[in-house]
Length: 85
Image (cartoon, rainbow, N blue to C red; front, side, top):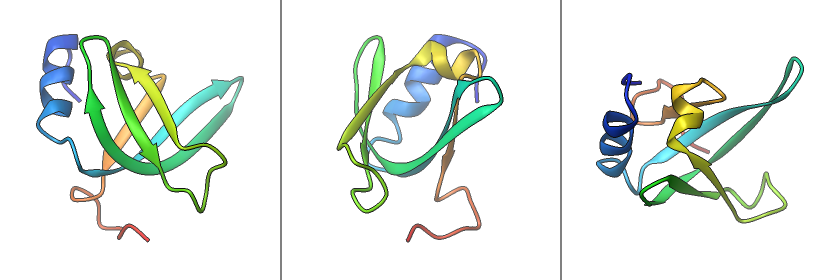
C-alpha cells in the first residue's frame, strides 16, 4: 500500500465495490481474517460489509491510519490468485 494517508484514501476510493480480504492484528500474536466488500469511504474511515456466512456481524470500519501502521492489511481479490468463495 502507498505511504501516506491521502494516497491510501485515494486508492481505496477507487476500489469501492471490490471484494477484499482483511487481516487485522487483534492482540499479542493474534490476527483476525475477514472477507467482504469495500462499500464506503469517509474522510477518516472506510467501511467493509462482511461475508455473513463467516461472521456474526454485518459491517466493520477501520481508519486509514490502521493501514499505514500495518494494524490492518488488505488484499483485493482481483489482485490475488485466490477466488472469492
